[in-house]
Length: 441
Image (cartoon, rainbow, N blue to C red):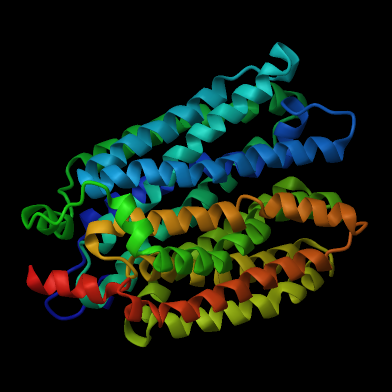
């Protein structure tokens, strides 16, 4: 990646690694649950005589985390804009990691009855609160250290944590699913949740040596730190929040269709083995991880909005071919469809999304504003995606076209919201204010 640096500008590897490692840890903890939802948790926590009801309940527990994310974003972004990005990230990592380990220790339905799914949902909510605050801090740790001409590249690095977390979760799930069914359902599924404690310790060790971001230090030195950043965002920057929610739709809806629901769809309707689908997701996640820094760097040269338009249109256009490829049958079809949808299309929009959202807010409210828009968008368009997909499949008698329409609608929503970015400056919400503050400092 060092070849993308402009003359006189060296990549701050320590900062980039610090922002990336925490994001990987948080998303591994989060996504390992998603990978096992339709395979394990609908059988050991949400026990029902109707498999569809059990699956819906399991996906409901998955969606709960998303609706807790905005709450976590509000709580931790307040401290992120008040006391700094660095220390807030320690708190979010501990909360997310603690919730994950507790899930690994939780007795199932057969041991403690209905208390098991209730406790599981409580822990999922705690995970959601933790990850709700983590994303903004990890992004800003990189974004606010970035040279002005490399914001796209720096902003893409913490976004890589999502696909790396998915890659790690898929690899772990792949090997776990090779266990005999009895071993998988009794103790095998617990291993990744308990093992994540090691990743948490690594993340804390790496971030311990990092300094506070330069832009927050300037805000603190000039007295620009607000007592109530949320109030400032809600009253003066609400348009930027709405735009952020909208542009998030094109990323998060397709992510959970191409990268998570594919496991349930391919196994239930295509007869594929879970291990094969997990391997396809892992390969696609690797493609996305490698591709994102290049696409982020490209956005520094040609602009983020034109690239977003291209990817959003391509995502909408691919919604139908995605299922046509899957239904060609065979392992190769699953790998190709997932590599295009998840690896390339999702990887592209995700690479530039964080930077696009962060650029909508001035430094004094950036943690709060960016986090609020991102996490509300994730709750609306992401957490409900597998649940919506499962419901659409059931109501349509197994037809895939309603899900394709949902993916296309998410992409169109992103395009509509993108138009709002051009009008933000007229209302005083955009990064014109941010540029003035930086210049004054």
